[in-house]
Image 1 (cartoon, rainbow, N blue to C red):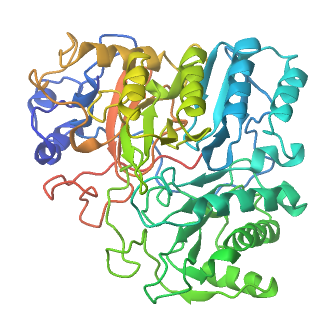
Image 2 (tube, rainbow, N blue to C red):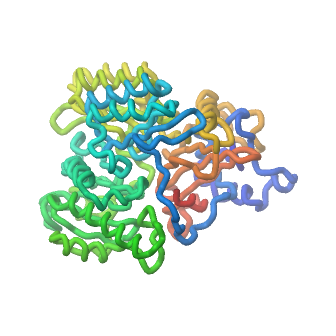
Image 3 (cartoon, rainbow, N blue to C red):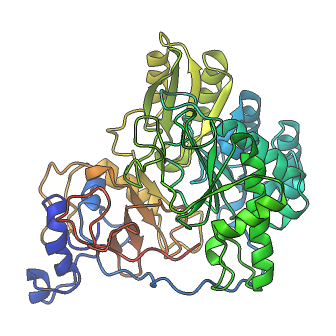
Length: 526
């Protein structure tokens, strides 16, 4: 479903993109609009969407940061949001970590108070939908008893992402999971931190570069021990999109991250902008690594300035060199993960990020019976179960497959996402989840209303692994970072565009062949 279908791979995007933008082409010569299908009509196969050229985008070009005259309205566990399908609660799970007891409490809450499902967010958190307006007290009691509300005043600011497979595979060991726990404790003990927005994000990357690309306001990139470039097991601290960083000792990393967040609050107050995130600070008040260095010195934390920090660091690459992995590559693809000590972890995804209580309870049961007693939610709307014996892991993965979870990277559901859409969101123009589901069911069948130039049968799903994301309105809630295919519902039909904010000056999408010289403007900041 979308504009300007092509039958070839990436090397056709440029020439067909010209047609979609009104250049020479049969569609425009005949006076035909470039491929728009009304939301709710027969959808296109998902992989075909990823092969389409970009259509003109309705997104504005980057503008000056907004002036905020209010606090953010992000929902929390205590601040419920009124949605079209009832109230919504968002439970922050720092680093995506859950014990079996906590996961059971979430299932009970969904069963007793919600609509019987749990939704996973792009920050590794969990949402409950269909809640009654008066259920807040009972929900808070359930979460409090499970240890999911360590500080009610801080519950919306505990936004901490960490590499989901840290310590579970053969990547260089790091302390990021411990850093996440320590940072969470520091946040919950900080009076000043209560002024942070519910959108402010901490990112803790174990050096592989998986979550470092997800737009953190304060990021810690673990450095491997013993290669002489810095303190053993140290970290690089970054703020916003500043290419510079500060090298700090590992034990100081959590406190340094909190200090950087407090420096942001100082800059935001001085600017009078009401900024919620680092990138929203206006000119003259931008927060840079050099500014944070002064705050660290005042806090007694030693830091060395690094003029241009990499996106990832590994033992096998040159010291602290970027991995050049595509920005849409995730480190927790579905399947079995081999651990360094012979055990296994299971990585699965929820179709469109939504699970039934039965699916959730199965995951919890496996984690308790065969695993380490823990679950990790990922920012790709997945779940990782650590610590399974190698002998039982395949059978447990098969159980999860039978239960309807995504366990194979080749699944058409892998890297397919959608916002809530109708009927849950009143702002959505259509039921995008139903349309995306119909696209998967259609396989490679070309819809009747597809424009001239539709691809032939047999076109694979999601070429090059680019995520496809369906949105019911221009807000595009929960969209991926990096390169992705934007399927946007408009009043006239779905518009399809290739979004590549990391494109080089030549216009070549990261990780794509040089012939693919197209770019759609990035979406506005949420």
